[in-house]
Image (cartoon, rainbow, N blue to C red; front, side):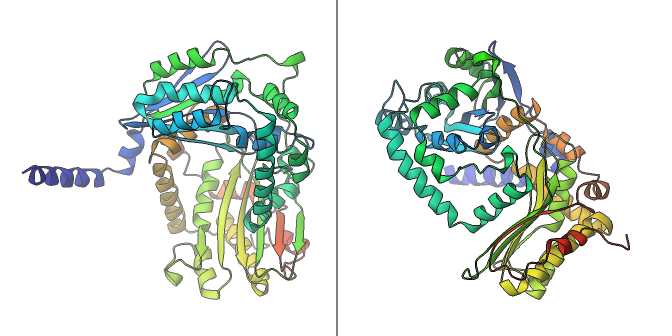
Length: 459
């Protein structure tokens, strides 16, 4: 009897969900509520009907704020985050998290650091308490530092074996040469070998300030309750800098240039080409995202072949140009990198580079209405995908508050999609690219040839 009653209800729910339009989805999205403590720490949340929630602290600090001497300090701290606090040993902290059935995680990027936890909504107070301890009173014991030093060094070795990471780090190093954005998030092994407890304490004291922090939450959370928890556990976070030494985020200039690491013993070439993209707060970000959706991505494992929607993907399949490629747009607060990364056989490098740049010229000049419509639909699907799960929503909230000072609603992103060609010409056409290449790259064209392919005389 129970099953015969429930199944029709579930089927009707699935039918009703399937009829929800894109417009209804973006209008039905919750809006973030935002509050600020007296010390400048911001609290942002979106309440949904989930029985779970994700809560975390997003901090405006990353490798861009580091110097050559302390590059990698943020990443090193990430490994020490859950190794014990002044109140809880590592085992006690792990038991507290496990007893809630929660998941505790952290990440470091070039501009942001995040500590967050996914747990049942009823356990939000305990989650905020534990996060406050991790951020404010990590033990940073000498023994644990030495143990994690070995872990970090092994991870650095592993990353060196990931040629995609190596290629994109090299791209940053040449595109933003001489500026902090050229630093990798992990930092050099020399620094990892020499970091002391004092280095890490100074890093925390210099950057972990309340106005640069956002306590974000999504899911089954009540904003007023979250504000109360923030007052209880984060009111003591300092907003003052010693000697008024407030770190200033200096502009990072883009330089059209190249860096090559040739190794003919490698089986495949890894190549990235990029122009300077738009900063996170720039409305041009959305049209550039549409352009990237038009260029798309490709992998040998994809089905479809000549029926793939992206013209470049169809060309790659038809001519066997590469093993894979991906269009990307990495945004920072005031700049970005818009590019194409591909992996190919050494004999196909020149051809793949030609067609990749040709795809750029097409979005600047001769892109068709059908391709634009497809790109818009792909971007819309991506925007709606942000609604799936409390963790991506929470991450989006934290980064939005740091970048824009508010959470930008999906409807506002949608309104920015329309302009394309003029924006692409502004960022791509006749611009000096940055290029990085690793592996058997003898056939990679000369930089001047790649530069000359950034415009069409017939245009």
